[in-house]
Image 1 (cartoon, rainbow, N blue to C red):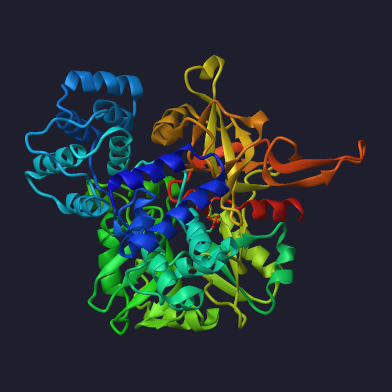
Image 2 (image 1 turned 30 degrees about the horizontal axis):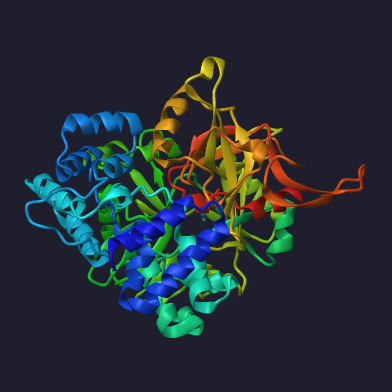
Amino acid sequence: MDFSTLSELYSKLENESSGNKLREILAEFFLSTNKEEPTLLPTLTYLSLGKIAPDYKNSVLGIAEKLLLKAIAKAANKGSKETMTLMQKDGDVGLVAQKLLKVKPMTLVPVAKLTVEELWKTLHKIKSISGNKSQDTKEKILISLFQKTTGSEAKYLARIILQNMRLGVADMTVLDALAIAFTGEKSNKKILERAYNVCPDLAVIASSLVELGLEGIGDIPIKVGRPIRVMLAQRVASLSGVSEKISGELQVEAKYDGERIQIHKDSSGKITLYSRRMEDITYQYPDVQSFLKQEIAKTAQSYILEGEIMALDLEKGGHKNFQTLMKRKRKTEIEKHAKQIPVAIYCFDILLLNEKNLMNESFTVREKALESILKKKDRIRRIEFIKTNEVSEAKAYFDKMIARGEEGVIIKSQGEGSLYKAGARDWNWIKWKKDYNHELVDTFDLVVIGAFYGKGKRSGTYGSLLCATYNHETDTFESISKLGTGLTDKMLEEIPFLLRKHEVDKKPARCNVKKEMTPDLWFEPYLVVEVIAAEITKGGLHTCSMHSVMNKSTGKKEMKGYALRFPRLIQIRADKKPEDGTYSEEIVGIANN
Ligand code: AMP
C-alpha cells in the first residue's frame, strides 16, 4: 500500500468533527485493507493511530524536533534559516514539512514512492538504532524517507515520527471501527473490549477477529509480558451503602496514594513492570527488580502481581506523598534517585502464578496464592487490611488510615463472584476516600479538552480550563466543568507546556461540548487533572450524561447535563490516560445518591 493512501485516511480523520463518522471512516478503511492487502491489517490498526506498536512495547522513537527539522530541510534542499523562520511562524514541524516539501524534491537518483511496508520497517529500524553515530544514521534514514513524500504526506510523516498525530483517535475508536467493519454491529465492541482488557494489543485483536470471529476472540489467553488492563473500584456516597453492594465478610484494605504497578515475571526470570497506563516502566525501578528477586519465593517461577508503589520515609517511618514518588519518573540519573527516594511495593492481588490464570478465581483463592509467595515482606509487602462483617469496623479502620495520612480504604468482596475483572470498574471493589473539607464531596479525574484565555493577572496565559468526563459507553469526552480555581502559578507554567503539542484548531471529534462552552483553545484528550468539587448539579451548559428533562414551569423538555459546583484543581495525574478519567456514569451514580 502506498503511504499516500494512509495519508488520505489521516486527512479524512483530521477533518472530521463527528465521532461516529470518524469510526465509520476507520471501519471502511479496515474493510478495504482486509480485502486488498489482508496481511497489512494488524500493522494498520497501529499506523491508523500513528503508532508503531502498543504502548506497552515501548514504541517511543525518540527523535527530537531539532533533528527532524534538520532532516526535513535537507530532504527539501532548503536552508536552516528558512526552516527556522517557518517553524517560528507555524510552531508545528508537520506544517513546516508540508510547506518545505510542497513539491517533490530534486534528487540525484529518482526515488520510488514510499510504501506503508517500507515505512513500518524503517520506523522499527530507527527505534532499534543506538550508540555513538546513531544521530547521523537516523538523520540519513529520515532524509531518505522525506525525499519520498510531498505535501500532506510529509506533514503526517513528521507527526508519526514525533508521535503526535492529533487525530483525536485512540485504541477504543479502533475497537469500535473493528466491530463495525467485521461484525457489522458497533455494539459488539463490548466483546472486543473484553478481549482487549486481557490483551491490549490491537494488532492481535484485529487478526484474531478476522481469523476466529467473535466467538473465538474470547479465547485470547493472558500472557506474562503483556499487561492486563487493571480492575478499578466503584464509589459509594456513604459507607452504609457498601452492604447493599457486597454481602458477607468484607476485606477492608488501606488505599495508599502511590502509583499502581503490575509486575510480570516470566519463567526465564525476566521482570517487567507496567504502569496503570500499561507503559513499560521497568527501567525506572531497578531497585524494585532486585527486591522482587530477593523477596518473592523461588517456587514462583512466573507470576503477574499487582500493587501500589509508595515512596518511603526511612527517617520518620511511613510514606512520602505522591508528588515525591513522581520524581522517580525520569529517564536519567535513575540510580541516584532510587537511592534518594526509596520505595516499597504493597501487593494487593495476583493474576497469574506458575502459568495458571488466577483471574477467574475468587478473591480468597488469589489472596492465599499471594500470601504464599510473599516471603520477606521488607520492600515487597502485603497491603494492610482487616477482615470484618461490620461496616462500623470498616469506618473505624478508615478513620485510622486517614489519621495516618493515607488516602482512604478499598473495600473488597470475598464472595464467590469476586473475580478479577480486567478493565472493569466493578462493585466487588469499592473505594472510600477522605473528604478534603467538610463542604467538598469528592475528587474526580477530569480530562482537559480546552482552555479559555486569562484576563488581568492571568492575561497571556490560561484563565480557566474546560474539563470533561469520559463516557465509556459512547467513547466520548463530555464537558462537565470550567475550571479556574486551584491553578497555581507553577501549574499555569506547566499546563500550557504539557498541552502545547496537543492543541488542535477545532473541536476534537470525540469531544462533546455545547456551543456556549466553546473554549478559545481546543486540545485533543490527553491531560488528566484531579479536581475536587462541592457539589454535582444539573444544568444546560455541560454535556456530561446529557439527557432530556421536563421543565416544570414551561412544560417543555430540555437537554440537561451534569456540572461541578466550585471545582478546584488539586494536581496533574500523569499516571492516568484520558480513558482512565472519571466516567460520566460515575457522576450520575454519585449525583443520584
Ligand atoms: P482511584 O485512582 O481513586 O480510582 O483509585 C484506584 C487506585 O487506588 C488504584 O488504581 C490503585 O492505584 C490504588 N490503590 C491503592 N490501594 C489499593 C488497594 N488496596 N487495592 C486496589 N487499589 C489500590
